[in-house]
Length: 450
Image (cartoon, rainbow, N blue to C red; front, side, top):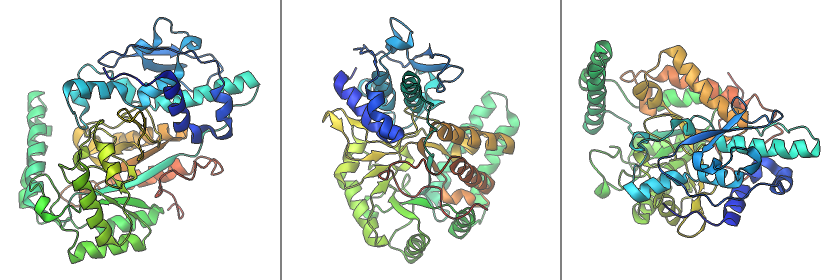
């Protein structure tokens, strides 16, 4: 198990991370009589409920779930070290320990054997922040302030601009795997649908250059986005796993110019193998900056390839300043129980990373591939995840891949539903409650709703 930093470091780190959430109330909250614990963490992560007092407005059914060892020996909220609970959840400390013991899982929750999935269902860290705010307000005889306005980033990973053999092979392998799973569970119709999609991938002549449609949809909803572009030089490409386009070609150059003109941000989508070393990240960042003629400081790793120990340090050393990789491939949710843009803890340096991280909570494949949903269920799922961000005044990113607007995929309706939900979530809170100015740019705001 990785040793936790000292109690004073944990406390100070959480207070920095939540400073924008509390604003001028931060000093009062820091003075609360919160217990101090030096817990012995255990794997796998298991949760236990802690009942909050009736005047709290932060829990789910009056409770907050915390790692079970942090509630021992008492579940009394007065005896809980809330600073350590928030630190352990926000910093994914159990995941870090799992990686140190078992190796990198990248971004597949199914590899965390025995994990309590309830940790990913709510932004528990933000709810702890609301709970501490309510505690301080109760002691002072004040009303609990309204949450901040939510900050929701619309993002796109440009994995494909045209149909290529590598992406046909990768998608076919995925559909075959899902078809076999459907057959094992007796869902013959679902298996047949997967096999039909494989056939279509190789027989269709559909155009995957969907940017005209994508940009028009975002303009109609008044949404600006971050487009993560692949820019690894050709000699370094991983043929099967990396995107197949070249950032130096005329069509991509015209796309970059149009993105700049429309006010979108250009970020980096590094190569498949560029998740743990500075040099390939730096080379790709410089290539994209030269091609786009704008500084590049944002990124998301391709296929969400990620290591707690290596990725953020490599990104920082490569000159990147904002990352949205933190998400699971195989499920939506809050990977670190938080909807919060913050500087994560670097356990090697015993200090915060230089890079700012905003978690991603939802992407297209969650709704169509990993958990295929009917239209009503899909809309409910989108609304539910964004509602959690709105209710806690959090910050999070959502992801949609441009090529899925093609007829081969047929996911355009879901993207339109996501745009509508982002606009709705961003317009339901008083705009006076804006987050601090150092939060990432390119929020799903601007313009007027359709």
